[in-house]
Image (cartoon, rainbow, N blue to C red):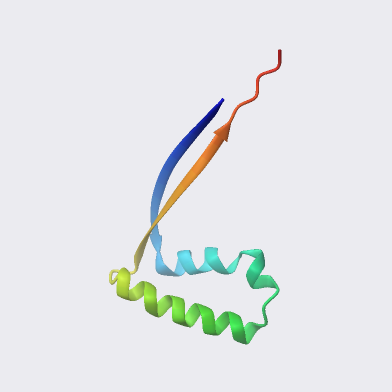
Length: 68
């Protein structure tokens, strides 16, 4: 069976950016490109979240397999 679960959390802007920068796509970019992206992302997020608390929303598909 399959079930879709939606959940969310609120984290600081710094935590959100740290989570983003831990993704594998950032590991292959050079440091200057990473800094440039994160600087621009911080600017955009401050516009959307002036209190610097970011709401992250996730949707997870939960699949359950049963043995006969």
